[in-house]
Structures are given as C-alpha cells and as structure tokens.
Amino acid sequence: MADAAAASSPPVSLPLAGRVAIVTGASRGIGRGIASHLSSLGASVVIGYASSAAEAEALAAELPRAVAVRADVADESAVRALFDAAESAFGGGAPHILIACAGVLANAENLSFLAGTAAEDFDRMYAVNTRGAFLCLREAANRLRRGGGGRIVAITSSAVASLLPGYAAYAGSKAAVEAMVRGMAKELKGTHVTANCVAPGPVATDMFLAGDSAERVRRAVEVNPMGRLGEPADIAHVVGFLCTDAAEWVNGQVIRANGGYVS
Ligand code: NAP
Image (tube, rainbow, N blue to C red; front, side, top):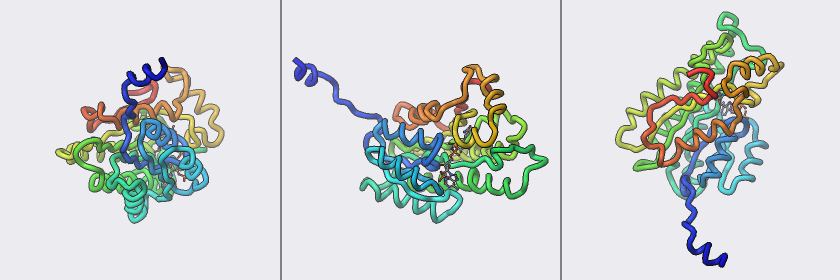
C-alpha cells in the first residue's frame, strides 16, 4: 500500500536544484539565514565572509552542498577570486545567483548623527557597503549564467526610507546601491538575469543588537505593526522567492521587508 502511494506521488523537485548561489556576508546574521534558506531550496552555496572563518566553515559543514570562501568585498581581486571559487566548487561553471549581503554599520554600538560621524567611519561603510556591493554587482553582471535563473539580490536597508536620526551616513551608503541595482536591471536586458534589492528593517543580529541596544529595540518594536524585530528568516524567505523562476517578473525593484513600519 505504502509503495503504491509512493509510486503515485509527484517527483519532488526543489526550486533551486542545480543552481549555484554566492552569498556574501554569510558567516553571521541575515546572510547566514539566506545561505541556509537557499540551501533548503536546493541551491549549492558559496558562503562568503571576511574574518569569521570558524562560523563560515561550521555552516558549510552543516549544509549539503556548500563551501566557505574568505573574500573582503572591498578588495577587487578577492571578489574575482570569490566568483572563481563559485565556478570551480561544484563543477557546474558559471554561478546563477549573487546575494550581496556583506555590510557594516560603523559605530553600531553608539550611533552618531552625521554631524558627529568620523570620516574613518564614513570611509569604512562606503568601502564595504557601496564599493563592496559595486564590485560584487559588476562581477555578477559579467559572470552570472545567462538564459534563465540568473538572479542578483542586494541587501540594502529600510533606513534609506525611514531616514531615522543616527543612520544618515549609513543610509547614504545603501541608497547608492539601490540606484545601481535599479539601473543595472535595465542594463541586463536580454540576459534573463534579474536584479533587485531587499531592504530589511531592524533585524535581531549582531549589527542591530550591538552595545546597549535595549532602548533601540524597544523603540523599533513599538513602531512596528508586527510588534517585534525581524529575524534573519523573515528576510531569507523574501530573498528565496526572488531567486526562484516564479519571480522573473520582479525586476529592478526595492522590496522593503520590515513588518510595515515604513514603505
Ligand atoms: P552582521 O550580523 O554584522 O553580519 C555582517 C556580515 O557581513 C558578516 O558575515 C561579516 O563577515 C560580513 N562582512 C562584513 N564586512 C565584510 C567585508 N569587508 N567583506 C566581506 N564580508 C563582510 O550584520 P547583519 O545584520 O546580518 O547585516 C547583513 C546585511 O543586512 C548588511 O548589509 C546590513 O547593512 C543589512 N541590514 C541589516 C539590518 C539589521 O537590522 N540587522 C537592517 C537593514 C539592513 P565576518 O563575520 O567575517 O565579519
């Protein structure tokens, strides 16, 4: 009886089976959640990180088809090498998906207004968030697989829309990425590679919970229609959908995944 039921059930085919995804900033937080979710959808995953080797290697060991690759996204040759590793790791050639998630919020434990932002903090955020995203986007535009299933998702921030005091310089570093992605979606005409941004609101990760964050958390929860902080899985599910074939018609968009506190 059980055999007859099994014989009549439809074949299980995961939506990202056979696809290779590069996720930068995947050692911790949102990127880690995205890498795990894309893996659960069938993708082979390249886990990019800057310094958290132990965390990245542990995640790679947990997932069925995954490798950890150290690559500072602000370093042009490291980004090239990250894509080289994606091409060779699973024997399938050009990768299908880039998730540009690596990012920093300088001085996260003690946010300052623009008037008090050190030039070094500005430089660090723009080096990782803006130059780093640019280098990854450029590599993806040249090297992702053509002809279907090609996906670029940059993780920006709902701070671009909320412009809350304390986030002005950081929001600028992400606004530039949103402009680049919306422009490149048009430039990729004919490739069937889509390019979108997912812009989280506050998510419970090291970045948002840095320092004495109790008051910051209280305020974020209070203004949120869902009455809570986001979790990495909230963002990963949106990114996962954008990576599927069902999402081809979503292109050049910024999706603010934040529980509805700002649009
Ligand atoms: P997180 O927990 O601090 O993790 C940051 C990740 O980025 C880590 O994997 C880190 O790698 C990596 N990274 C940092 N600098 C890098 C560099 N130069 N090269 C390569 N990788 C680098 O942060 P998160 O909260 O998950 O944030 C992920 C993304 O979401 C960021 O782009 C952030 O701006 C954005 N975001 C976060 C929130 C939030 O509330 N958490 C809200 C909106 C947007 P190592 O572990 O090796 O350092």
